[in-house]
Image (cartoon, rainbow over all chains, first blue to last red):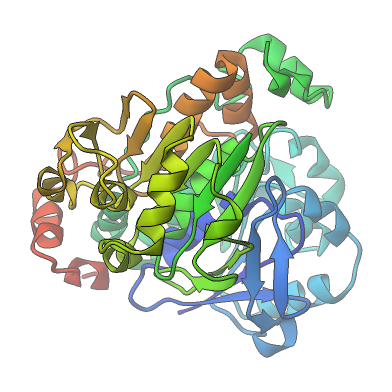
Length: 213
Length: 213
């Protein structure tokens, strides 16, 4: 099972690495990190370098496509080599997936027209103009198209996907191997549960709340 | 705030990237990916390449040390450059932390003697021989030493740590930015909740359960 994870500059590392950790552990998995140019891309945040080992034209028919998000998504919204690759790969993929604002790239490439989808909570309102119907779910399956909400939701998506691909026992074994027994110290992971002043600041693009008191 | 994340071949990517995504988003964070040699290390699983940008002797006094785990930990149990670096860096660190079997490396370097600590559930029984006292908690604070359980637990650890460093608002804002509102499709993330036959297989080192039915 060939899995292509798209890498690009200023992606959010966890968008890609959460699902990688789950899907890549399947015995049948052959994971390729694909990008426009072989070499190192730099992630948003602290600048972690990830290796692009496979150029787009070297893997045109993966079984699973995964598009992560992050601030670098904004540079992938125009038609070009990435969209062409996505459309060609999607023509034969078994699953076409995204995490976070990766769904905006899939939608901009024309792959989510008329489909239910999700994205980072701050980006959901961009989906309709791209032809997709946003939902409030954390993981959305619409046929072979699977989109996950922000950043950490890729872990939930990957476990659900493994359940469909390989069965519940395999998915549960991977959940146990990754000890995914989440115990967040706060209940602030959704705009419905986080303190209202934090939601408001982030909606307004004001990240001063990160400076602390 | 200088954060040193140790990289080595055959690490588990999510051990490092979970906390990176949280800690690296702090405005004051300067994250360095340190290792024995500059260049690319390859992660366990699908072979993701991560960049070591800083050699050990280039950053000897980080404020936060983070040691991830993974199968590559086994090659870091003997005294040598990594242990020497850990002991020197720990002498002035504010926080010395680990995820998964990274705690075995900290303990082997002599840094967890007499301290409460945790590790991946399959490795907890190795802590006593290394001088540490294993606990069943997902995140363990003992003074400035913070250890997390397996793989995904580094996200919970990082949020708790940010709470202590920068306050609850900052931690909650980062939880919301990473949309960490976990909704695992199964309740199998701990040996106490996973199906008994899966726990038994993995305890016996039998990973055939990953082959599926």
